[in-house]
Length: 195
Image 1 (cartoon, rainbow, N blue to C red):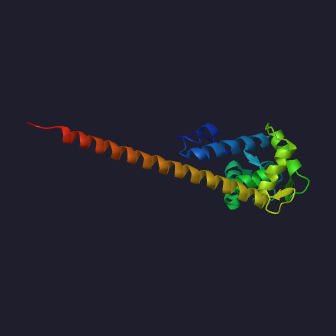
Image 2: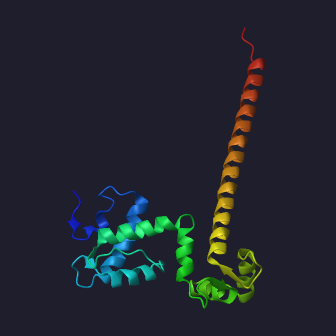
Image 3: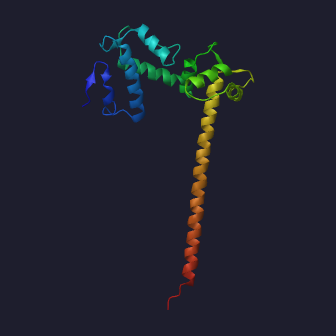
């Protein structure tokens, strides 16, 4: 049986406890954040600390428990619930809130360029401006959270469609080759005469 702490399973034991791989990674990350802020190591944090943690991981207006005695299990359940409430594009929405910008509802091309460069990506102002024009539906020098989410989801859908079409073409090509091989074999059998 997995060893537990007052905060729930230790990060190295999430997999042993039977959590699916994607949950193991997420819970391990959340546990690291929780442990960092649980400075007295009692396995509990207060609401003020949880609000600060939620801001840091991209939830600007979190739904917090009513108690000031928040365990890791309560914290992780709340975060997972908040992520689920974001729906499709939730990760993009969280990223948008984490990006530094002058106006909380939108991001200019220069702010976007600065963000990309801060992530170690090469991005000129012209390139950032062209990307912003692609994302923005209004043709303005900025894009909103919804525009960014829609752009990313559309791009993901296009990539998935390309992958499906490629798999379909590959399967059709395999069928064609198999039919040609069968035809060649049948033709070869016609030439084979048994005496």
